[in-house]
Image (cartoon, rainbow, N blue to C red; front, side, top):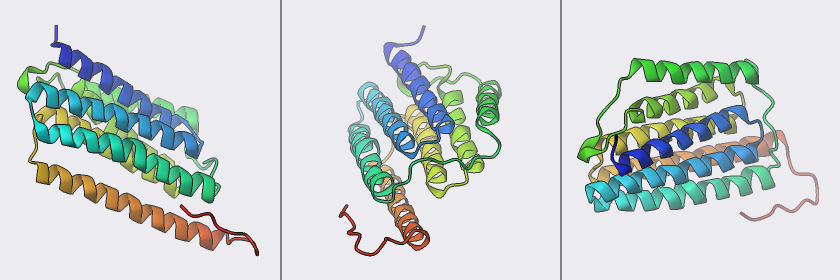
Length: 218
């Protein structure tokens, strides 16, 4: 039997994996952002659990930043820009089809579990499935980037990959120098803002506003 913290981490990582599957199986941009926000909030719970067990103040800071920025700020800002302002509703461009994609995703999860054995986490956290699940999340994010054709959907896939790496790193090491955490974290935010700016520019070129239409401020 694992420790209570290990059980919490296991359940939390399974929910994070399910959110990755939800993103992979959805075609609505609003749901992409909702699922990503929920996944990031669950990731903050994982970081908080590791911080509680390891008594690491830096991980508490990282958990708070993850919840605030990745769980709330990024989905909210992207929804206002992409869904409400640019009127992006549905991503129908997927190859192969949805059912085939989900089957491939399930196969990647099985491969991750078979290829990577049980791991004992730092500070006594026992979770046999933690590393395979984090690897499966990375693979699902990569699959989303491959099968999707829209830039926004590919961006969400990239963010899912980052969440998988984040989950594995935090739970395996349970400690990072805060400057490294902050540097990687804010590089991610900067990359996201650049991608949003590129998406906005491309959308305005392809779909110019009609005469007399007033743009809403973000």
